[in-house]
Image (tube, rainbow, N blue to C red; front, side):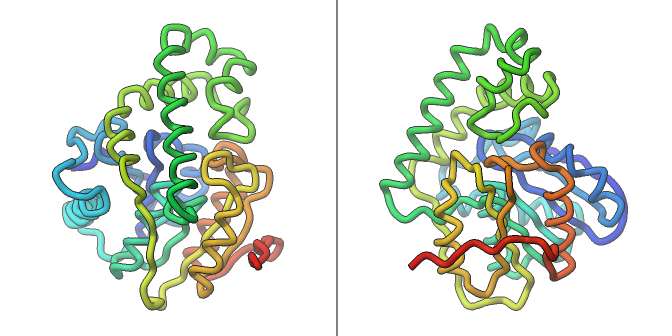
Length: 272
């Protein structure tokens, strides 16, 4: 089963990390969320300390869905609130489509690229990052202990990599290298999101305005494809926004679960 940690009490809230990442990415927001929810943070297959690899004999969408169906069953979770980032945001949206979530909050979710050219950019970016991470691995310890080093290692993911603790930056890089075969498999084919009829559950899509992985124009595509959802910006945040502005991200997730958004949230403009 998926490795996980659990914090707090209340209605269950499952937080799902993105491709090449790990559950610890949610640590900056867990304390705030645990005041109101039973917070559960798993590692995806092939990531972190989850013992089972991704099932490569079936499409990635099916393998990930099966993993979460088993996870929910083992933990006795019935339609928890779900929030996810990047690939985790796409998984959260699909759990909502399958009526397996009480509410969905997706932070810079994958699956809204316009076509193969957009997906090729993501695949090329990750290919370069994986190669760079392997080259940097012998020097990652010293690099992670300096602000300049953390910016060089993690500036592609965060708007403010200096906010990362050195051990978190080092752990992120080590995890990315260990997960490289799973990352490559997930990036073999475009994994897109195609919504059906609205399910009536609250859906919030929040996009980071400094996202270098899933470029912010995709927020406008998401608004076109899912006009019934609530769409907001995460100002001054990168693709993984939790360390950039923990309070903003936590409040956005709480608001999404409570069927609202903060009063000062900015709605992305509609693409003409």
